[in-house]
Image (cartoon, rainbow over all chains, first blue to last red; front, side):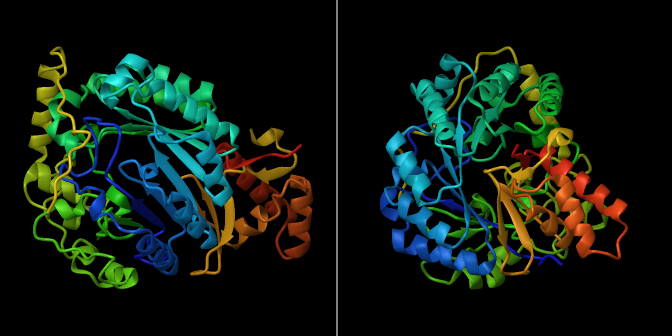
Length: 367
Length: 93
């Protein structure tokens, strides 16, 4: 029997700082600067406590995790605890020497993001001249003998180039390709009208991805994540609230998802103040949307409730305005019309030039 | 592809480890994992690249004398095939 609530994966958001400024960034729109970040000793304790809770994988992410100089020590400790470590990076601050050092300390796999298959478009999204360097970093990862995941966030402007993205990943020899459609939260929600593709774009991309997945079976694991806005049923966001994933953010908040603390009326604990095991099992925030007691109609009596757990709480709040609402992405949800309206706007504006609002490179909000 | 696998071994990206919480084995790989039952662990622990699929079948058939050998052969081939499709097992030959 699997335990009902056991975190298998720790998502360690080491920093919100990042050299890129993608307009769909999933980080909170207000984030703290480096002085508010957890120190090395606290992270090491978090890894120990996560191991005791049953965590077996740790994703070192951010922001750009490599902006911290203690990644080596963190990986070493994770390896001592037999945690499978994934480094999720833009690649930009990495050097080949550091990559080999991280591997020697026990790093298991690397995910590098790229913002499209063509340099000008990709660089326009990332907000700087990064494309060439990213490809170089991907080749280093492969030549170091580490498994490589290439992650591309898809949106209206690059979705039609999905074949090129797949070819790029094949050429590099990626072990895994994540074709992730934008999730419309945080910065992406702010830029939704400019990013949301049309249904025709999505259908075409889905067909291309399915064909490539068959062709590459056994050599490259291709994963196409349908955007919520074009699915009839919501996703099991985070595999259910507080069920399998545990996020610790740069300031030390332990969360069921990296945006949970942006929801009103919920309280979350900080790992500086409370042991992780206690937070996972007892904190009000983690328990708020566990089980079925809280489920709204029509989820309450829906046969899908054991698969999607009511969908995404952040989407319920940011789109429908209530954290406890049925995820509006679901065609059965009373607020689904809001998703339909957003889709209609995307179609209306499909021909207009795209204008993004970026997160500022040096932006830092204190408090 | 499964048919071409003679001596199955784990893809270097995957790691097999004991789960201290359950006593079962877990197969961990980039950003996901499999919680293995006894049958799965028995097979995977033998996928070291030294044994052929046929060796593994005979060894497991000897251990599980009460189970029809044909069933064991079918289960092992199907399991190795599924994991090969997912890129988690490859041929050592």
